[in-house]
Image 1 (tube, rainbow, N blue to C red):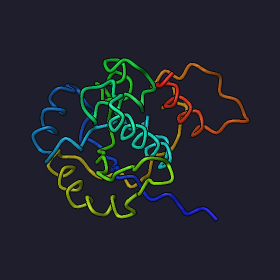
Image 2: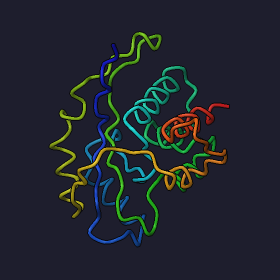
Image 3: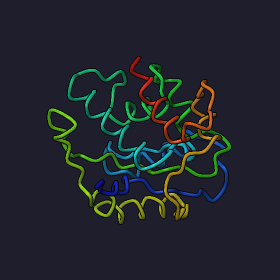
Length: 185
């Protein structure tokens, strides 16, 4: 019997107005966040809890093995979500951009991954442990919480430049995860 995957520490934020200047939003967010484990992710590119936890695990594994392509853990996470080797392309595809009305505020968990997939410990309270801080960030950014969890959409696949055909034998979530894994090839 499989245990349900816990919520990834991600909070949807709806901005008061659509983003006109990404640098302004990013500067405000960077001033407000308490450390570099917080990041903004395009709303449509988060497909599911499983997708976000897979990206987190891959980020932690790359960090542990000295194989990160990006210079920081938050940029590596975005790079993997975007499914690319190019950090600049990753931010263009999976980061916030002009015209966006919402995004995810992500808190990358600090848990250790051990030496293998069997040794991964996921803190089931990682969402709850940072909920009040995320709520404060949303409030200070003048946004409102979106009461929805990540869901896979064709729009999200298009945003990350998924270039394979989607067929009825695959779920959209599988397409997102396969795209993430392709960033290693």
